[in-house]
Length: 305
Image 1 (cartoon, helix red, strand yellow):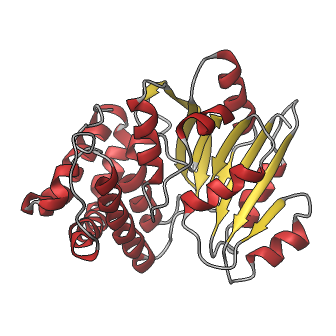
Image 2 (cartoon, rainbow, N blue to C red; image 1 turned 90 degrees about the horizontal axis):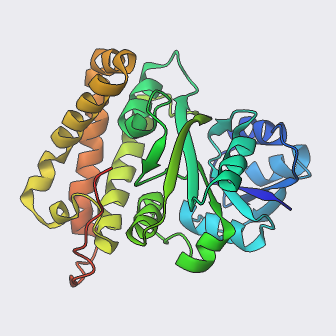
């Protein structure tokens, strides 16, 4: 088996059909398999068994965080290239072929690409997209980066043999794992032509709840490694992080993508509400988790992207 595509799944019955249809229609000249690790109780596993019998399905009886689900998929995957996407993402038809070719042509620990909005008529979906993925737009240049999101990334199998599994945290496991690779001197290639379409949460309530969860997970990840702004977890200025993120997104879009810069500002009330929800999750996570002792390794920081 040349490649394996691993998909973590939780309560994804509404979206996973789109994902698996796209994965089964990948245009490649090599063999690949699809592995789904599902911890749902909404009938997702039964749907996969009935409609996608060729998919290698691992059912977990209790909810499993995405990093752990991916690790379970790695254990049973047979490919030398391990590609990852999410159950609410729809890869383009040459997605896997492009990633594998990049691995064959260069010595990259990881190859990933751009994220697009799969719900272009929904303003809440646009807000989620711009708040969460402004660093991985298709308009950004190809090059080496410090982080690749696990909804659109691939690794050589040897990377996990050398650096271990994804961390067992509720979110931001892709940030922590990327940090581990970059700190070791590995190269992470971003190619904007490698694309997935993300089915974002269409309702305001779901959008805000998800941003809160991401903020909480971001703070917890910074308990483990010195990602950017790790210092803020324990200090009052952490309440200013939503404004910091707002300024970074505005600057990035103004430089790289004028259309999305205008769209972001048109949707600013929605986008700002998402940033605030993320900030509340980040700032209050401190009160819901133990404070570990710091070490010299903990204070090492990741270079700017």
